Amino acid sequence: MSGLEPLMSIEELSEYLHVPVRTLYDWRLAGKGPCAVHIGRQIRYFVTDVHEWLRTNRETEPGCTPDGR
Image (cartoon, rainbow, N blue to C red):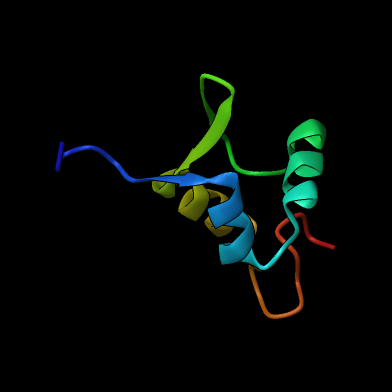
């Protein structure tokens, strides 16, 4: 089991990002948040997917968003 990648619950991700759980659900519906895994009725996030999503949303330069705005 030690070789398995850690998973985060939506509540843990909410706490980590300091955003409400509702916001994470809204981002999922809009296709904006990190990819998730469904385990039964639960949503879990691979830690590496969260880190990758954060990297892709990182500013390319201070004050410049990834999409150039």
